Length: 563
Ligand code: ARG
Image (cartoon, rainbow, N blue to C red):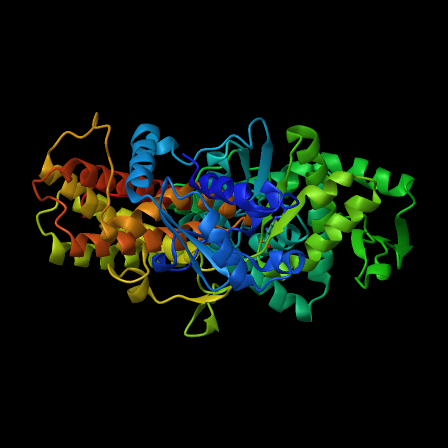
């Protein structure tokens, strides 16, 4: 049942004709606290036409409003406050959730619409950074959120697997490396050669020429060069995969930068045809000075293509292949200028769909206020962070519930979930501090707290062991339960807002509030009391756990049944 509509209808009947239903719908607010009702209508916009003070208008109107279906309707200052009929409301909401189960909150707006999501995208032979981790979990969550609205997300890992750095890597490997060493610890050792290359090239600039020559060989399809490159790539991907497995993140495509090698000529041709290419000191560029931006560098002096050239080809390929409604890029905020340029150049090429490209930036993770360095760190560092989180989770489980079965699996779900939840609970643009002890606490604004609340709800249901599945009357008039019930009804709207803003934190913040509200209810009521309200209360507990689980799932966090 649409309770907001009920309020709108009641208002429209008594308001002057020139005020439309649409206007009323927009004006209605949800008061912050329940003592001001469940919906409120501000009368300010009527003051001019009625030549009256808003609080007078509110007083007049309240007398005219039909109150059937509401608990009461009152005026407070310039507002009219509507108090919903708790029984009708709870009965309707709980029945809807029990019926729809994990489909509760689903919508059809995305039906038949593809949305590629460029996410994770680490660089081959380099450590996966905390930034890549953030991109992975944010992208994954956005994919799940929009899928609930029936969009088809296409998760693309745009690996950094092409570029002049591979020439340097080959030179370094050939000079200082060995198969055994690389196989033993691929990313760390490849990084070591790369760093050493840079150091030595300062004294011996001829190394740079060598590196350029090797990259040229790669671009020309030289067998040896490509064999080394694909070996580096395979080993790196294997390491990355350990993290993806732990996070339970899958990709639809691992089409990295190299995938666009044969698709860039067409882009360069179009740029040329449209008269957008200019020569500048031997290189080919698109001038962007009219936007106060440095030029987009399309081809280097030696003909090598660049990061943005590959992104232009990728953007076009995604439009041609997926005919997207939106094309998302979850990439750290330090690349803002790159994406601004990308969109401008595509627009200049005549591609209006460039407007559907959405850059989704995010901030940094810090420790003690400092940027978390992944110089020494890498996948192993990330893996260690997850291991430490899991250890902490295990410790708490040992204390709270020593007899729990599958302790290790639960600790993994709680530890990894804690890190992911922490990453998603802040507005994504904010930088935030990472303190493991805080992150894995079972109380406070943490993932484990939400998981624990769900496990508690499930244990209540097990204990009760009462069948309420075909109970039709699920009315609850209890004031203690009211906030929780209203929050349950908010869920579909929360999902829509999170999707619209590409903001998983909307879901994370919501689920924290819901968990808190349910725990308060639990502390203040005797849920399992054997009276006529028992079945409705159990239905409420069930509904809460359904929505907690769905919310966690939307964030990519598991929900253990017991912990
Ligand atoms: N590999 C890049 C980096 O680590 C991120 C790629 C982002 N995606 C893109 N289409 N440019 O900085």
